[in-house]
Length: 250
Image (cartoon, rainbow, N blue to C red):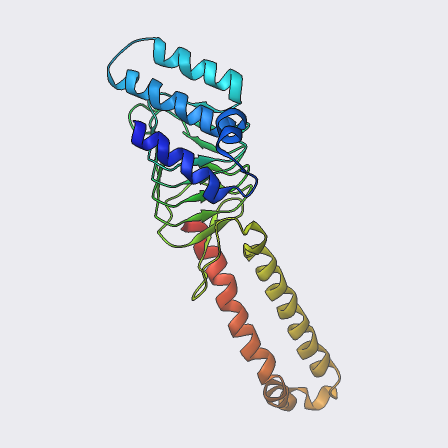
């Protein structure tokens, strides 16, 4: 337990540029306080001690605003930044060096018994206000954008954004965990693709309407050739749209 607490303490200086000295972290960081209390209550929970672990968890929530069920399993080096409103359920598993921001919920989706909360891999970043619900597996090095709602499993080394959460792959590019402003906007890309598609179709319709009525059938082929570039663009946009809908299924 002591080794894990040391890792929790050290990671604060790596993840938070506002951390200036050890005394400030020990006295003013509710995320570290909640983790320290959880380590102890989790140990008591595993010992089978009744009531006391839940009472300690309740006290930790009162003083820090962070609710971690004593049955949850948290790896070492976990950092809860600010932390107000964070809720971590009983059967949740959080891997080593995870970064969790305020308002995050690692919760269940029903009243089923057994494993009903998510499992997070190592080096996972969960943005502010994100909800990860159900007995799902989140892979290693996953980044979940702020405000996202994740309901299905996510493979390793990718980014999830939106409601419901959609997987967005960033080929050949790795962003730092704190660079939330660089998260891709898949919905904006799809809307832009649909607008371009509408404009291309309008140009084709206008070209056909501009031809004499008696030669309109003959000019269909000419119009198709003249707008071949638009059709190629449409095929590229189809790929963007299909990736968007495929991502919804994760």
